[in-house]
Image (tube, rainbow, N blue to C red; front, side, top):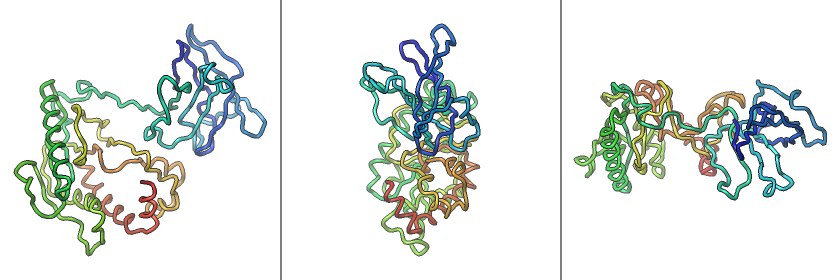
Length: 331
C-alpha cells in the first residue's frame, strides 16, 4: 500500500516486519532506491526501542502471527519537523472498523493499510446488479413497540424511494421488504408496512425485560422457518437505517457482507471469548468479524443454519455475568 505526496510514491518496504500485537515499531529512512521516473522506494531499518538497529531484510517474516496492517508516514518537512520521513507500522486486527484519529489538510501524517483494501468493490449499481435479477435481496427490519413506529415508517418510505430510483436506472438488486415484529401481536402499522409477527423470547427462558434487543435473534430464528421469499439473499436491517441511495448486493458470491463496528474487539477479551468458542489462538480470534447482525447481507440458505446459533450464543453471552458486564462497558 503506497501513498502519493507531490507525485512521489513512498512505499514502506518493511510492511511484513514482525510487529508485536498492538505495538508500534519506529522506522528510520536510511537510503532511497529509484524505481520509476516519479517513484522512490524507502529502504528502512528498525529501531526496536532497545538502542540497537537492524536491517529490515533480516526482520522479514511473511508468516508472522501479527503482521502490521496499518502504516503512518510524515512527509511534510515543515510540519513534521523532527518526525519528518518517519514511518510507523502498527498491527491492528480490523483496520476496516477504525476511523482515523484526525484528518484534513492540516494533518501532516498520511496513513494507510497494508494488505487490507478498505474500498467497497463495485459500489456502483451498474457494476454489481445481475441482469437476470439473481442477486436480488430481501430487506428484513426488526422492530418492537410504538417507540420505533416513526422510525419504521421513515425507513420504509426511503427504502421504497431508493428502490424506485434503482429500478428506473436498469437492473436492480433491491427486492422486497419485511418488518419483523417480535412483540407476539399485531399493531396499528400492519396495514401500512409489510409485516410478519413472531413471538418474543419467553421471559421464563431468560429474564430480559429491560433488554428487548434479545428478542431479535429469536425473531430471526422463527422467520427463517416461516418466510417464503423469492430472493436468494437477505439484508438484515433496523428501523433507524435511512436509505440515502440505492444499495447493490455487496456480497462476493455467497460470502456474507457486513458493516464493521469499532467497539467490537474480541481480542481484548480473549478469556471471555473462549468461554463461547473454546480454546482459540490470537490469530483465530482476530478473524472473528467485528460485526453485529445489522446491517448484514447473507444468503437465505446460510441464515437457516446461522440464526439458531446466533440465538443460542446471544442468550449464553447475555446470561454470563462477566460477558454481559464487559458488553455494557465497551459500549
